[in-house]
Image 1 (cartoon, rainbow, N blue to C red):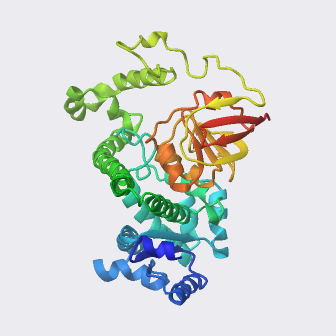
Image 2: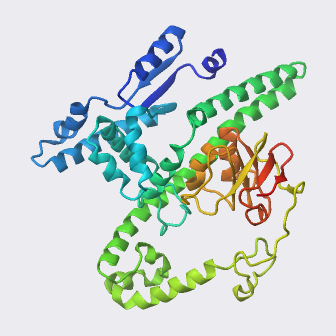
Image 3: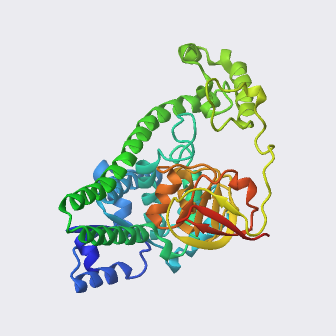
Length: 431
């Protein structure tokens, strides 16, 4: 515990989730007994107080729907503020939450309605927390750089699918705990190496400065990306509102059809959207055709004409045999042997089970929940600062990126050894 105390003068920990037992009180008692510098905060767990929060601040409502709507919004603001100020967020699911498992087991579609119908205090807390989560992180999702794509806020099912997966992971896989352990280990190693360099003050100073810079600027790099994503999201929300109206009017087939317009066409489209309906359909068809082709990974000079590109999955790849070693490079250290699960879509309901090896083409934030339960990670494409490597390091799981055609060469269900130290993947057994 001393290492944890040394990391920071005081920790703020947000306790969310199960409200039917005394787990919060037991954590509080343990913290007080150990004398740890931790302040605990949590959502409003009293049912009536939570329900009345909105009307007490924003005015009374005769309709229960609007009363609940105001309550959810006010509770969401409070929850979001507390989460933003917290250093660690802990979520506990207990026996009383089994109805949620049943709600999710019935499918992601409609799961929020099924949870709300339970009328429980737990449901109230969950729904408020979920609204707060979307308000804070709703900009994240598949291909989030493209404003016409759906993300967690515009299609909450994407976030609910992530929760659906994470609920299957063991509590020991919680990212907050694993990240804290990694931080403690990092501090220990930095101190140990710094002590070894004590005889050379200049080298020691350079090392300590570099170690500190790595933590500061790595976080800064990710914050810069997050800020850019949030800015794009503001544009997305406005454009999606227009897109939904166009779909409702029958002049567009998809909310994101505006992404198929040329910039000089935008004003004319807004003035007379029906004139562009067939043009957008033709462009969507062309977009889908190009999406089915495999673009060159690297090219010099001018890129080859798309008419020469092969269709995805149709190029020949070498088969593998037991004992074959596939080369990538070291993403996150560690060695693990387990069943490989090839996943091409992060929303795939048949995704990997806890402890299996995730084999993916590439990853972005929509894939992150799969990392929580994964025993290791292999990706077709990835660089030193790619998403797969960053998340693997945060969670402390072996990762080997840039294993060319891994998703096509490694059979689903094969047993593989992922060696994050050497950057290799060895075929141990075939399915």
